[in-house]
Amino acid sequence: MTLKILLCEDEDKMRELLRKFFEKAGYTVVEASDGETALEKFYEESFDLVILDWMMPKMNGIDVAKNMKRERNIKILMLTAKNLPEDEVQALLTGVDDYLAKPFHAQVLLTRVAKLLDVIHQDMNQPLVFIPNEKRVLLNGVQLSLTNREYEMLYYLYQNQGLPLTREQILLAVWGLDHENDERTVDSFIRILREKIGKEFIQTVYGIGYRLELSKK
Image (cartoon, rainbow, N blue to C red; front, side, top):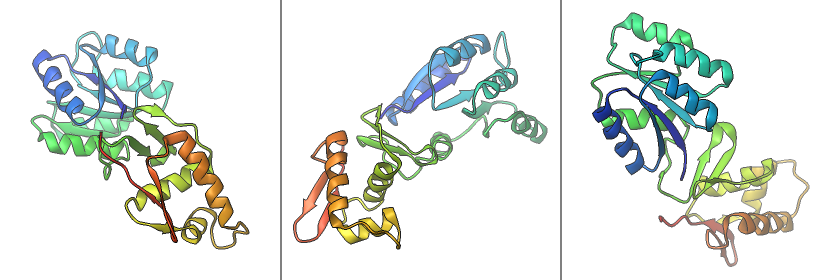
């Protein structure tokens, strides 16, 4: 997967440790060692999440966060040594989405990041990664072009991966109780999805329907 994080931390050793930690978890990381560089990279590239230190050279994390939030509603996690309640309140009022004081447990940080990205229950090393709050799907790091209905069907298969689903189950889940489609509609959409994600992931279960199987890379 290629969910991309902009990591803004002025301490070189800490930044290197965090980069390795996130890369091992399956994220792509772009680094910045000061506030101005963080903003430059933010304007140059697209990111799914920004991790900001508060006390950085050239521009502090609060000002960086304000500028980023004015540009677009990017998810921001502030990771800082400032651990007083009033510091957290100030950061959250700025528009920061989450706040974690140093020192912190690495697994707590990873969970906070996954929750912000709405991928908390996913294996980030699988070829398909869903971002449900934006209805986006990445296939090996590349965003798929899906219609709403295609997304809903693929996400339903993903939520029940490994389980054989009948065509009627899929119709009810994707089109609702009052649908007027027949089972051939499901077959048509499955054909389209296989063209977009590859035939190996959606398996035909003869006599029943279909099953999604995601093999780890």
